Length: 149
Image (cartoon, rainbow, N blue to C red):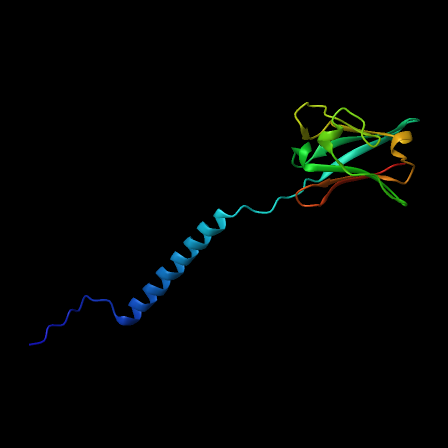
């Protein structure tokens, strides 16, 4: 005597269900693994204004898409003949180094709107056409590049 179960799932439907479950599990594992690794840092885009004076230049940050710590920023003045020694912005915090000074308007230790860089012409050797360049110490990308008028 043979008993047939008419309520069982056919082999074709069973294979389709197993493939669907495998795809869903693979997607869940992928999302979980991607979440374990942090994404790359993005360098903030900064807008600025620049004013020339007899003593030098003032570069004021008008807006920053993302504020970053001044410890993560290098600063230098470039000219056609080379560049000055790059210094981290925290080293020029209210002090002139290589003729450049950083003034933190918000006193928060971060690069943000209202902050200012003062460049002394005599100490930095800056002339019209030279640039103040800020780069990220972690990625090396340029954050700000201000050309002196």
